[in-house]
Image (cartoon, rainbow, N blue to C red; front, side, top):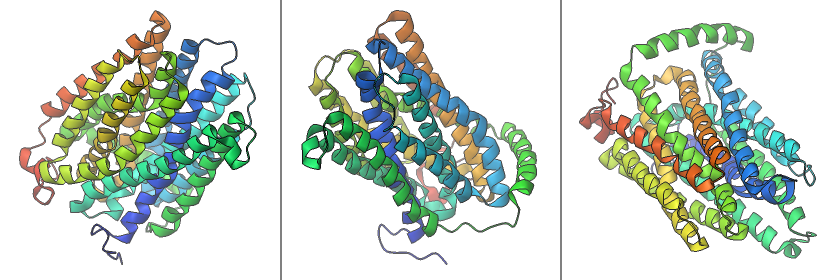
Length: 432
């Protein structure tokens, strides 16, 4: 029986579920957005130019997304048939933790080895999130979806920010921690990210109960393949759900691209690495309360209104980013991104969760993961192509605006229904 614990009126299982965001967000902050781009540019780059390293970073992010695209829907369908969501989450967790820890191994100029480990770590991070997201409808009551989803993003920014703060201090003052220098400090940062991710993931593993359906993994594979075919057929008959997936694919592409490439872009236009890392740290602590605030915004005005606010801010941010020339400008943009990043993602997740049948969440969230992670192909690939073609990172980053504009237009073209989006307790499941 689920028990309320009094904190924000949410169940203990909801808090245990959100703890995985607290755990795995360190890969997104310390590794993906923070130290990997810096180390690639300053330590693993070898004879490559700054622009070439930036393009390789973008292509690697795109390649990881392709791999998840191929795996997510099938694994989601299998997990639903056998109630193996946690089992698959653990599989991807172990993959990501191992690769993250091994990032301490490649030496100077070992570009390909570093990119390969980064890619495997990204696969573990993104693949695990498919099954983490699919547990949301099982730990939150229908009226709690916006708050619980926002809670996950909020504590995720807190966890990622806390470890990033420690890691930034280690790199700035390595002698305080008994380390030989900045190179050693960055390598230790990768190891601490792996340990943090694995340790805090245990809260979800032991704190969230997933009723089993009795199917073996082999039987679940056969049933999952059949269910996936049915699901794709059903999706064609639900235009609102299919339309939202397409729209989400467009705008979340921009969100993911900005987060993954921001530090690499700053390095490419000549901003100092220490300022970029401090700005990234600032983003995490701004994003923590902002994500929780967006949960309230979604319950008060509806998720579409909150998502719209976030996309408008992103359009302004990317446009202004083309004119960056001083660190203080990057700090300003970091604050703006922190205000809307987690909220845009959490309201997208909770809006989608309103549409998904509770007993089939992993398969449907496999499709959600498919669109969200496939979008991470398009954005980085666009940036990489424009960067390679023009040799100008400023032109490359502006290309992302197109995705936000298309996503925003599509979001308001979908017939969600005003009442359904503004009041969770009054929504129509076929119109939410």
